[in-house]
Image (cartoon, rainbow, N blue to C red; front, side):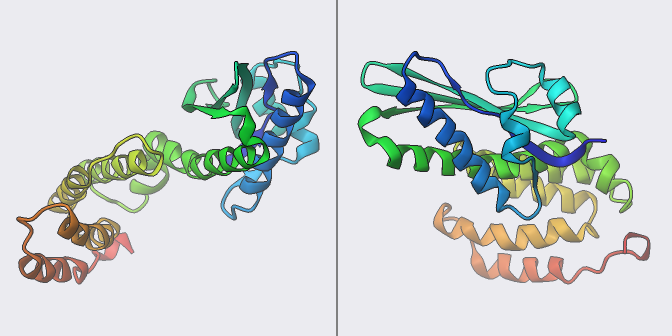
Amino acid sequence: MKAMHSIAVLPFANMTTSEAIGLLADGLSEDILDNLAQTEYLNVASRSASFQYTGRGEDPLLVGEQLGVGYLLEGGVRQQGDTLRITAQLIRTNNGFHVWSTTYERPIAEGFEMQSAVAANIAYITESEPGHDILANYGWKLFGEAAEIDPLAFKHWVNGVMENRKFQIGEGGNLATQIQLIGNAIEVDPSFHQACVILADIEPLRLFTDKRFDPKNQSSRLKQRARLPRSSNQE
């Protein structure tokens, strides 16, 4: 039985003939695994379990089944002159689809500092991606339906969370769009307490991005929204 909030970090492939690059690839994988293992809400397969797949090129669906994890992180390291090109992919093991992928290019001369920085960045993005993926694909059945939240309101809220995700992983993201989407969720379902709380947290950030923003009017509106009680069938 696969746990949805679970992941295995497979050994990053050495796509060169250099033994030194191979050691760096292994070190990168271990650093990512170590960073992810410190995340409380994500179950991470052990090094011994993950590294048994070194060089085997197994089907992600099979690996996910054998390790009982919902996601796999894999990647590779190749050399182009004095530059290292590092790729990373997060794969959903129930269908083999890519959830997220990225590429880093760093000078070889940066050595261990580069390895640590790239590993930390990959781990930072990866630790939140399963949660975002689960929310986007299974959120209504897992959370929204049980809480009896209006389906359209829940959809707006999820889209707002996904907009924030883009910002978190460096793929853009627009604050005004996020605020609008969360606001749409509240307009549809004023008792959607979580959306009200999130909006109260993020809307004041417009002070830094929109000169037309009126904090006095918004402050009273946000406080009114935050005080809205949830209906008895949503508690």
